[in-house]
Amino acid sequence: MKHLYKYIFFLSLLCFMTSNSYAKKTQRKKAKTSLVKKSKKQQKQRKNTKKLNNKYVVNKKTATNKANLTELLKESNIAIEPIKADSVPEKVITILSAFKPQLRNLAKIGFVNATAITDTNAVILNYQVPSQNLSFQYRPIALIPRAIRIDSLVSLKDVSSLKLGYGNYLHQYINLNVNTTDQWNNSHSIAVYNESFNGTEHHLQKIRDIGARYIGNQYINSFNSIQSQLFYQHSQRYRYGLVPDASTLPESNYEHNFSHFGASIGWLNLNTKAKLININPIARIEQFEGMPNATNTWLEIRNPMYLQFKNNFKLNLDLLYSFNQYNPTGIIHQKNTILKFDPSISLEKWGSKILVGASPVWLNKDNYQFLPNVHFQKKLKDSNYLVKVGWSNSFNNNHYASLAIQNPWIMPVSEMKITTIDKKYISLEVSADKKLDYSFGISLVDYKNLPFFNRILGTDVNSFGLKYQAIFESKATTIEMEAKLRYQFSDRLLFVNKLSYKQFNSIKDNTKPWGILPLEFNSNLNWLPNEKWIFDANMVYWSGAAQFNETNKAYNLKNAMVLNAGFTYKLTHNWSIWGKGENLLDKPYERWADYPSLGLQIIAGVVYSFRN
Image: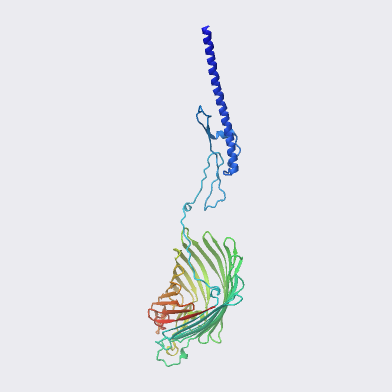
């Protein structure tokens, strides 16, 4: 009986233990099922949250929006913490999404993107970046303030002034300038001036210039206007070269007077970007009267025209016509004409400007030439250097006035000729910073009929004074160099320098380039320290030109340096004082042989402004 009770006790204990283990197993299974359902519910809530908040955007081409639980668990790492006896087991799921980036709307410089590989792994995109684009150095553009070029007289509206001055050598100066604008917004400027002085070393060393000028701007609309100009100038002087001061002959023997007057008209078009065709024609007619009663009349028409296309592409169709009638005496008449076309194509691209064209030219209708016209300029990469290279041709229809401007003591020539200039050049321009820029250029130039100037031998100098003549050299070749330097500090200080050198390699007819300066240097300074003071200074240096002497022997004139300076001080709104000094070194020089200049010249005066 005792053994039966033992068997029943052990059987009951075994059943109890078996049922308890089964219950725990069932509980664990239920917890796992509940955890999976909870994870599913959380995943669904996360997806709904993404849609509502719109915080994450998944590209349809690179990610799949619909994924079942099996694929999600395969791509996920599941970490399950140990089950606690007193709480429900917790599970943490970390999901790593596969994102495949793509490039769109590239705005980079020189970037070339590789093709993205479509897979479920991380995508690596390789960029081919040029080495010069890995780092950029900021280089500001050199902003160079320029002097205002007054196309119209709007800025001088209703402002007039009277300028008076007096100095040594009986130097007298008067200038009346009137500027006004009418009711139709047309601008008008009228100037009248008179200047004279007498030398103390020679009674014939005196000059008097009188003249008048009118400039008008006919307003059409905000983009178009017609500009016109009328002028008259009369110069009275005497040939005092090599004439004894004690000469008692009448002054009429040495008179060397010039009269010059003319008119010009042009159409100014400012709306150049909005039009396909841009035309700015200019026409002028002038007449010059010299000694002895020689006259010269010429007409010139220029029409710069181009067709503007897209991508900075231009078709240039420039036109030039020049007519010159020269009358050295009352019987002889000579006519010279130039008709020149300049068709060319210009393109601005790749940081360069390219111009390619040709110039058909007719000289006096019977001389036809077909000449090249090429220009190329390029800004060097990562620098402020601008290189210019080209080959151009130009023509000067010489007239009496142009020769008299170069040499005021010239007599009429027997035959007027046209000068041809064939130029091959290369230059370098550098903008060092916003204040300083400079340039240097060298060119090879071939001249035909280049005018030289030398004295006329075999004349009675004592009775009629020293006379000069123009000699046209049929063919000459030169190497010319030119350098410029400009420094400007704000709008207060401007310093400009220019150097030019000309070396003749070959001359066909003459032994030397008579009257041509080999070296010239010009320096100008303008300074505005405040609103009342204005200072300006100028220095000119040149090497002497080759000339003949009285015995027909060649020699070179002495080098010369001339210093000039002036100032203006504003006293009141209407009154100002001014002064100017010329040849401050007080050393007479000779630009043309045996015509010495005056010494130190000082002149000062007042300016009264009329303002409405």
